[in-house]
Image 1: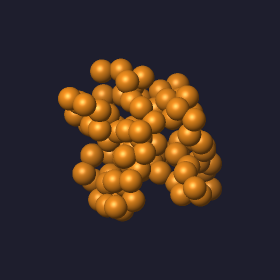
Image 2: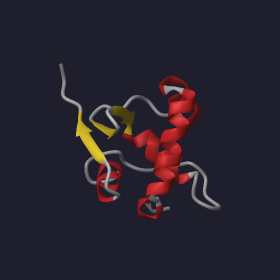
Image 3: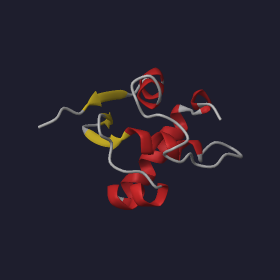
Image 4: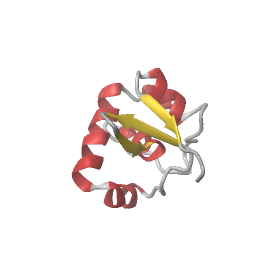
Length: 95
């Protein structure tokens, strides 16, 4: 498994699923908690970045979604992938 296999299209498919299911159901389906630091922002809406990346892996041919313990969501991993694919990633600040 490498995160760099994930495509922009797969991310957008995961985002569409997130929108259909709603945040809580999406996170529950894939076994993720809410993002603590990094959020994917598309058209003014925020998405839990690590959960989106994990789900997106399942949209690749012959691949399953990634679980939360299979990769990191930090700035050098899932958040970097999203940025590299041209998405806006915002940092959640405490308070």
